[in-house]
Image 1: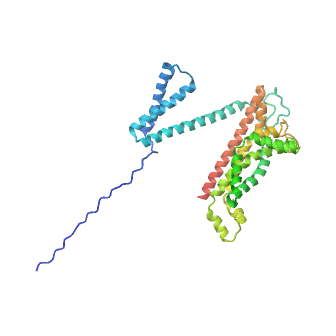
Image 2: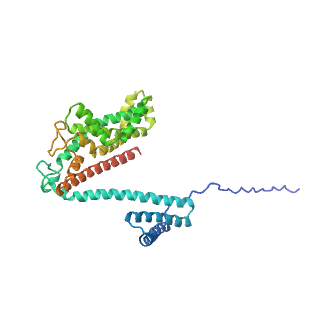
Image 3: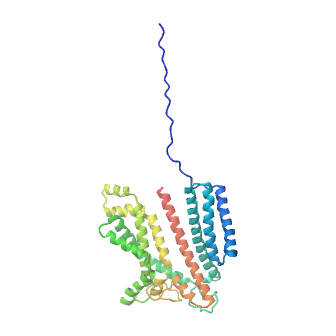
Length: 367
């Protein structure tokens, strides 16, 4: 009797069809892409030079640059479309436009800073510029006499008073908007956002009317600090509100679950967690207030003497000193004005660097 045979059936698996569309690589830049951009720039330059400067009845540097940029975009779009899909072409053209305008802003900023530093280099080269005031210096005296010490001290005193006013108010407003809320939160947020775009001259007029005219106080560093506080308050309040929103909600829930009250949660959990970022918000507010000229011009008064008392009379600051000296027709006063402006730029730059460092450390600490 023959043994039964077992037939083996082989079932073939169906072919897997990948229906998912492949992602286009928009970020990789090859040598051909760089050469295409460079060739478009040079080609546009040659074409515009022939047409704009030789064949057409046009002239002017600004028009030449604008025409060069427009022709470059057209050539770059055409060259990119010959080698890449339409999506990649649109991305490359948009990136070229964004980089061009970003470079324009950077060049303008460098020009302003460089020109100010160049004009103020003569005054900055003398040590007395940082160690003396203008009480013994006249418009015809050389740069070896007088300096910005009184303006630098006045700026620090006014900003210190403004910080003492705006820091608790700004953080308290942010806590109310983010932690308390209620029916008054929306109108308060609207007012704070509107104050962010408040012209500085309006803040100066407000303090001038209420403090100097109605209250009868003299022009002083305290009045200038109040005007600066009006400008700093919305910046600190908005920045602090954004910072408090980033604090994880689980920390609040854990604190409340352990029996802590809302005030204890805010004071012992939320604010300590957001402390580095709140410091960044404070520094940004200081950088906004330290360069204000219009409020100080109306409320502080002008003096050439060094004073530490913000309530006893006029107190000058770096922006106000720059404004007053720049109005003079004497070259020495012009140099002193640009020197004071350079010192102010350095102080603001230092504040922004500190803000960036604090923000970076806060991010690293959270990780």
